[in-house]
Amino acid sequence: MEQLLAMKKEILLIVVFAVIAVMSIVAFILYGVDKKKAQKGAWRIPEAVLLGWGFFGGAVGALCAMNAFRHKTKHWYFWVVNVLGLILHIAAIVAILVLL
Image (cartoon, rainbow, N blue to C red):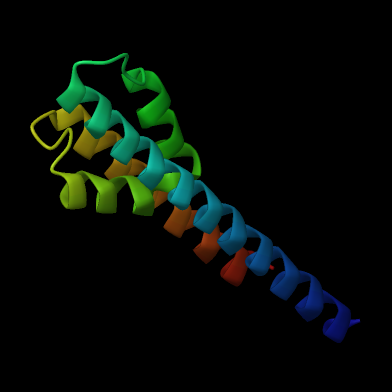
């Protein structure tokens, strides 16, 4: 029984890390695309989309993209939302490790 629970915990952690990785890659790409569009004066990705991807799974990618592309770094709310998202992701991983 303990072995089964440990295996479920391991699978859940793998799934959570995979979701965070995929969402971070997408967030990174979205920030890069938005930066290019901003430089060209073209249609932009809505801020709500960028913030949503960062908060709900892609905070690592969003924060990396903000620094890599020097994009949205002057908007305090981008820092707050992405850092809160990162804290949420860490809390989810810790909860899985501790509670299961």
